[in-house]
Length: 120
View 1 (tube, rainbow, N blue to C red):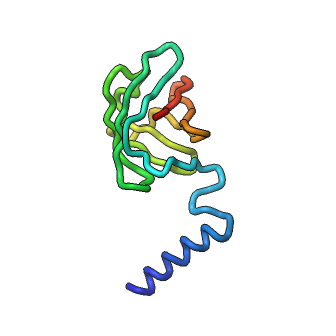
View 2: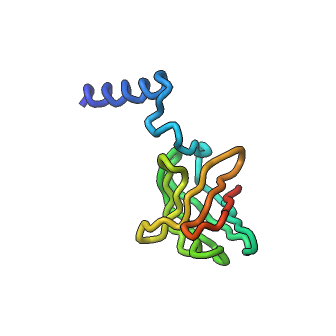
């Protein structure tokens, strides 16, 4: 057990020191904690409040939309951060949109191609 923990720790350190992260260089850096209230906006549509939940520092979690969301984002139930950025998915894990983090917000497109922004 100790060897497995030591090996895992060594891999984490190697990712930090070598310049290569465990995610690819094109990955989206997430805010330290995705938990909390976010607002999704799209041109020509009302804004949509969403509550994100997950473990501190997690790369996946759940979403509870508060209604009035553009396109199919009212079906949002899951979020995950991977090589392509933040993906918002429905209860069947079908992607609804993918966004990347820049500055203080996530920006991207829905699967239909609509530009969307997610802010605190």
